[in-house]
Image (cartoon, rainbow over all chains, first blue to last red):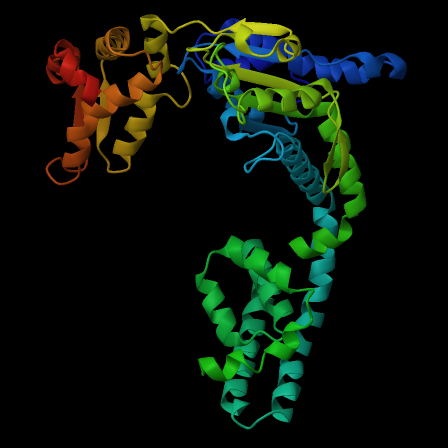
Length: 238
Length: 221
């Protein structure tokens, strides 16, 4: 919202909310005032406190809607809480401080997002470099470890290697074609396989929702302890 | 790729910036604030979720340091927007300290029939457009005449007057009642590529009986 003037904020709100000009104006002023405050030289800046707003109006006139739209317009940490959900500190239930915690949580997400955006290209290059490095070792790695283990694993192992081979071929193509979305998933699969997750597991994950997998895998990734766990799930599934 | 990106991000820096951002730009919207205002005279026993909460709110609204998992956050410059209907209680039922912390009071006016008409028509996400989109997914094209929309607005308005004022949400109930039969018939008896024209007569036919029968509309609309 860097450059949104009060008038522009109102105009933006007007797209979704009818009437209530006064409320919109006040909200817009409050938003703008925060930017103004940050421009003020430091000693005075501290003393300028925001003018908190109390909106009064019967149900269904747009109070909540204004807040909801405001959240989208203002590129700022935003939380909406229902006062009726809180209880006094010390009683069972949410205490009022939790809204500040929520707010910080949102701020962290915002900052992370913008940071992600910043390093995106850098990351892409690194990932590309890593790709082939990662691609080949996993096949060898699983080959070694399973052959050292029980014989039962051999059929499993073979298919695993085959699959690895196939995905590798497919993957190289995709890399050339620059199918970014696909590539994201493949990387995670590859990276997790040295950590000892069997191909069976991967096959299943492909069916699951993409976002879910990525989160899950990234959580699993750093934990190398998964390696030890791998012998157990495999026989169960085969 | 996300992981690589994550590695490139200095998380301490993120924390620091996030806290800075919160302190300077954070907005907290407190809805239903009237629900924690205790209407005077009703006191008796500890009021766990009313006055107590208000007192808890005071330091936060006024500015205090709250411990979060990312570090201390000072709330001095966080903007608070509170909203409430104040049907039963009045803003003056809030404890005075809290009232003082919300210097700007805005009253939102009740919606007029004209407002309803605009709400149905103008916003990007207007209800009429939503239904059109729903029907279009079945390749049925829904259209409204202008006076039909006027009529819907006026019906919604008069029900609000007579039964209970639930504001713009009334439009939802009216619209869904109006279109429910069509929604049921598509695509079975109303096939693809057909058109539905919503006219004033149609609106009247479907809804007027309900409007007149106030007892009934208390339950249906």
